[in-house]
Image (cartoon, rainbow, N blue to C red; front, side, top):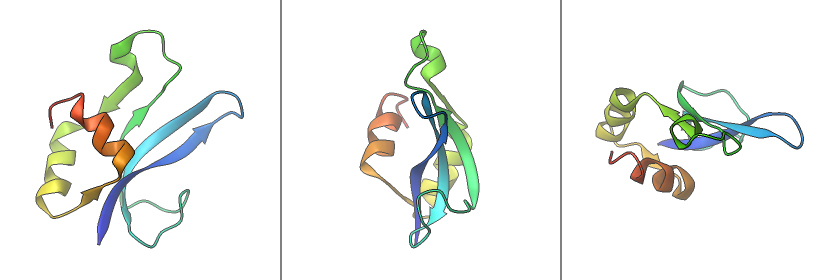
Length: 80
């Protein structure tokens, strides 16, 4: 089963997150099937906080991928 979830990148006090499609059993920072975008909670402008390839997200959701709670909340801001 494929899940859309976050993986942590960035520095200790300035984390950034990558949104990716992962096999369910893969660890948090493990290898992704495909990276779909980024989330930077420290960006000043709201449009710079979330950068997602919407077409690829729709593709994975159409194939039956399940988003994590956090990714589902982030994607709800984009009307996906």
